[in-house]
Length: 275
Image (cartoon, rainbow, N blue to C red; front, side):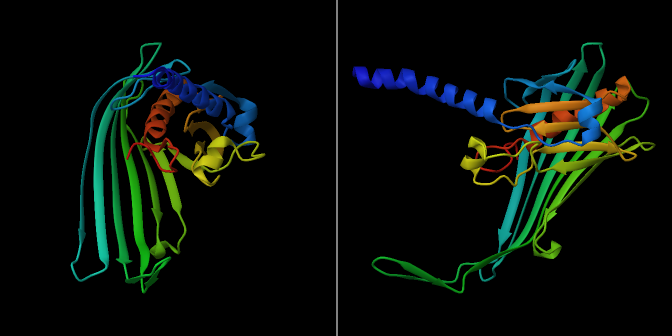
């Protein structure tokens, strides 16, 4: 190996780390409600490792271990039909703990179902161009559902949460994303956030992905008041907790924060990185 090749092998990882550091520093903070901004506490999230789940550490909470993470799927399309279907499912569980000795086990099930029409049409090839006649692709319905169960020693009851996204022509071409967290007595609504606090000019991440219209994170609302929020990356993870919350509420929503950061983290191709 010549000197130039050796220098390239040494410099390339350093350059990539420097670029990632610049992107991380440049990433903006997602928009949260004014009430949470004024009466909440903000915590930067430290991430370690990978494997089945990243070890998130924020406030006095951290993810310690995970099990599962397998994915199964199936698809079908008729030989003489443009109708196509596909589905996949993933299951995962992880342990979430606090520095005060609180523990929770979070069980996740995420499934996707797709129905669409994909007609390739007829393609004519020329010397300098091609022409396709009669081809089209229509998404009839694409649903993405995350279900979670939180079992913790801090609460007598079990908490359940769900985040569901649906889009396609059956929904008027619009995307509908809804979520909730409940123990059967309390209901906390989970709302998606698509904007930054101070949008300004497009960041390096926006330019690479090609759009600012992606999911930035989630805000949790109970009885009309915000109690927490979480930014899901792609590099900067942030958690907010209302100062009005009791320790049990913070621990429960914190455990769901870890699930949402893992499942909805954005990658630079504009999709989620864990499904």
